[in-house]
Image (cartoon, rainbow, N blue to C red; front, side, top):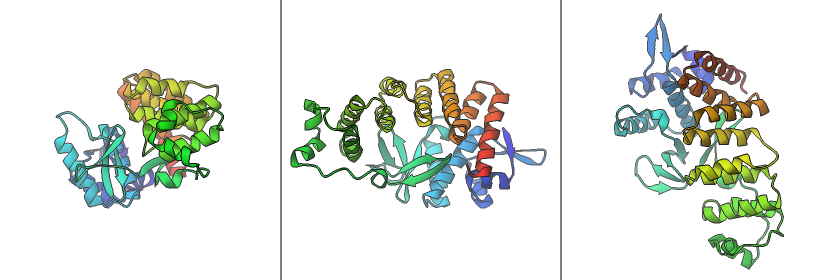
Length: 292
């Protein structure tokens, strides 16, 4: 466990003292007082980080605490909240389950806004806002939105950029066709990093972890986001030593990748290497203090 005061937590997560106290009163975090200072576990830090991202998406503290309490009561004994992936769905909270999102209150499945990482911080964006505008499509090309064009095998004569733009446009409506379009993009340009990242992400969300790993590992070029995503896949495959190596590769490519430091701190703690864990946690704290 690690000692923090209210100013530390506000610098790290942007959470005021009142929000931290509310999380503690609700039992969602369980700091321990030692020598006059509060000590927080990694479980607590992950919950604080999730609450910070949800607050950034304009979710109220009351709703955040209510959702976390409901999830905690529904978890099997011994399970931790940091095993649950939460995201923002407009002004609501959703639970990510593979490729789908389930609203925490209604239980209904829905499409999502995405929380994305940029320079070590979490931001909420619309998938449509993030997508480039594709070139105008012909009537026959529009038919590909239902998968017919890709299922029969389209010519690779289209440029890699065209395949990428079409894949991005249909990810939500037809993820299988989007996967095929990303594959065509990579066939046209094996070093198209964005296509590798998105194809790997779709395969990961579909539970096809071995295929996602293969996509992230192919190609002559690499990228810190590819290494980071590969590490997450390896964690899900229960290959934590390999995940540590992938997170370290992400940091070799981008030493300011704050999330890689945070995840390494967590994995090293689990691997019973407290010195390495503390080193990466301090690096994460330093980057948050500097606004990296």
